[in-house]
Amino acid sequence: MQTKTATTEKTRTVAERNMKVRSERHEMPTKETRTLLKKVWTAAERNMKVH
Image 1: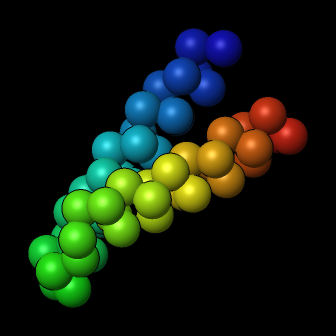
Image 2 (image 1 turned 180 degrees about the vertical axis):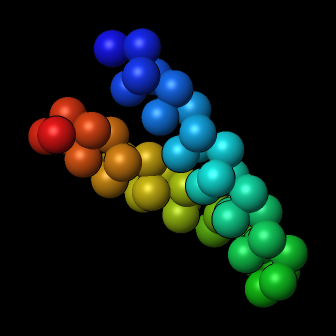
């Protein structure tokens, strides 16, 4: 369980960094970014439950 948490945290930081870069590059509205992040997180959570 501990390694899974560590992986989740690592994935989260990477995803946040990617989103930050992406939003800066495309100048995406915060609402859109939030929706995108939400979609990414539901997918990530689903994947983690499956594996």
